[in-house]
Structure formats: C-alpha cells, structure tokens
Length: 237
Length: 237
Image: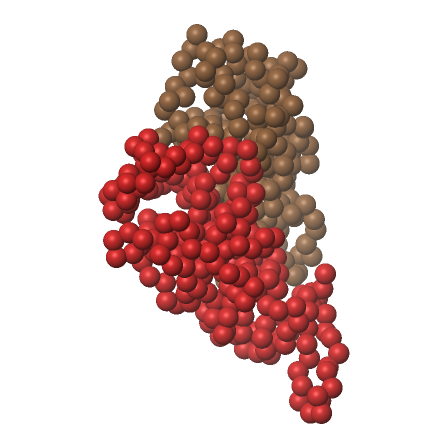
C-alpha cells in the first residue's frame, strides 16, 4: 500500500490549473484523462506543501505536470462550495480506485472537502512537453470550443479562468505569453479573436492596440516584395 | 479555559475582509484594534466552518462583525505565503494573550500557518453599526489615506483590495453600493476621485459614464431655482 504523504500537505486545500496555449488560431487548454472507468477528464492539479507558498505550489505542480518552469501564472478565483469533492457525483467512482492504491486514511483525506485555488497559466504550446500524471491515461490540448464534461466543478473553473484571461488580456497585456517574440498585427488580431471568441473590426483593433503604446514596431524585412510585407511588432519590455 | 471549537473549522484557512465605505468624499475602511499591548490594528476576519461555503463564511463573519446582511462582497485574492502568521513578528505578541484564553492546542491552531482568502465589501456607512469583536478594543472607519500599521500582512491585503475595487468599479459598475439610491453626476464624480485618489476632468468623466449607458436620468425636481438644479441619476436595474 502506497503512503501518500498527506501529512506533508495542507489538508482541505488544493490547486487546479487551467493551462492555456494558442495554436492554429485557436485557444486551447491542457486537460488530462484519468484511468478510471471509461476515463474521466480533469484539469491538472495538486496540493500545497506545508512549507511552500501557494505560488510555489502552483509552479511545482506545473513543472511536475508539463515539465516547464518560469511560465506565466495568475491566481484567478477560489472555489469553496461546502460540497466540493465530498458530495461530487464522481466521488463514488473515484473511491474504489483510490482505496486500491492508498490506505484508508489517505483515501479519506484525498476525497474530503477541498477548497480549490484556481490558477491559470499561459504557455507556448510548441515549447511544452506535457507529462502523463500517475493517475492519467493521457493529456491533450483541446480547443476551448471542444471541452468534454470534466470531473467535479472543473468545467465551471475553466469558465472563470477564461473570463479572467479576457479581463487581463487588455489590462495586464499578457498576450505576449501566447505569441512568438515578434508578430504581425494580423497575428495579434487573430489571438484576440480566439480568446474572446468573437470578431474585432481590424481598423478599430489596430487603433486601440497602438493607442496603448505598448508595441514596438520593428523594421520591415527586405523580401523582394517589400511593400507587401507586413510590419513586425514586439511588446516593449 | 475556553473551548474555541477549532474542530468545527477548516484548519489553516482564514478569511479577511476589507470593508469599504464612502463618506464626506472620502473612501474609508473599517479596521479594528486588538486589546493587546498598546493595541494592534487589524482587518476583521475569521474562519470557515466545515459545513459552509467560503461565501457564506464571509457573509457570516461580516454579520457577526458589523451586524449587516446582504451586502456587496467580492473575493479578490488569496494570500498564501508559507510564513503567513506562523513567522509573523506579531505572533510572539499574540501567543501569551491567546494561551491565557484558550487551551494549548487551540492556541497552536490559531497561530499556525494560515492561507487567507481576501474579500472586499462595499457598505453604506450610515446603515452600519460596527460591533466590537471579542478581542477588540474598538473599531473605526479610517480614510484610506490614514491607515496605521496593521498586523501580519493586512496592509498588503488592503492594497490589493483597493486595486481590485478600482478595477471592478468600471467593469462591474459596483459603485452604486457606495452611493444613495439617487445621486448627481457631481456626486458620482467625487466617488470616482476618492476611490482612485486622483482627479478626473468632469467633461470627460461625464461622457465616459453616460456612454456606458447604465444610468437612468430622473426628472429634475422643481425647487424654484429649477434651471440651476442638477439632474439626479440612478443605476439602471
């Protein structure tokens, strides 16, 4: 029987991560499928060591999960319903599996009520090599338009994360975490359309973004068809 | 020796509340002074029953503290440094006082590491009758420009709350919680200046607010000097 080490972690408090990436003009989220029954989809998550801050815990969970350090992370909301996990319809499904692997006390600990701190992360998909967790069958990048039913309240957590990302995109100018270092106005425009899932008139968008005074316009690269080449931009440091 | 009932609450997780009110063109915060030493200022806070949601816990704490129900509450950030409380310079000051009142186990529980969920509240000061808590000498409304040093990281919590309030004021149009039901444009303008602690040109401000299309303009009241009377507004439902 495996010893889970529940005494190392703060009880009743967990972290779940909504990991956003951007690829082929689509906003995507990294989700995992647990090896239980026909498979249960979930957001990657974990617990907080008694000796680490919540930010370090989120970073550690992401390092263990997707093998990447120093990525953009923001806490966005706490999910603290009194019935979280302990009265989830998935708890009965999970319990037999967990009691196979852990002793009774640890299984009880794991399926107790948990208040969850939601973090979202922004990553470049091409730089990420997602790891399959101990309980996972697979991990997948899925378009935000194609998210399956997930465990507990994870679909709700994703909705709040997306709302926070939209709010932060303008105010904190975090979009550059989803783009390569240099990009065209058209590429930035496509990112905004993907994140907000709606169209923006290109002229208004360009004016709004340039008015923010956060972009540095780079020289056009001589290509032989120079007057058709779009300008490249990067975010000012 | 008093039994604190730590077994009723989730360990290592607390709530602190930044209660904003608006009076005499000043944004104010309700803070309390503990009966310890020369007095230690702090934000009102408390713990979460195992059987209640975090939102209900915040509401209960505010009801116990300021005797008001159904007020506007928003969670805004989690404070989860690994040294919170347990390595606070105030812990040594608190411990003798707490061990006088509680048994050793409860005193240990109370001064352990706590991850704190910050909520802010918006109230009408005239409708509030603040209660002195069990450990408090007094509670006071203090201008955000005149906040003393507070316990642990409470000054930092206040700074984050103020930032969240500023961000939400435009986006969630929550200002009406700080104003009487009807108000003049000048009164709304003064509220914005107090919250942001800076001046807004009246013309631009009026245009921006009216463009949001959230205000309903009421009839001018006949006063005998009608052409000088300002319009009254209220927020659309």
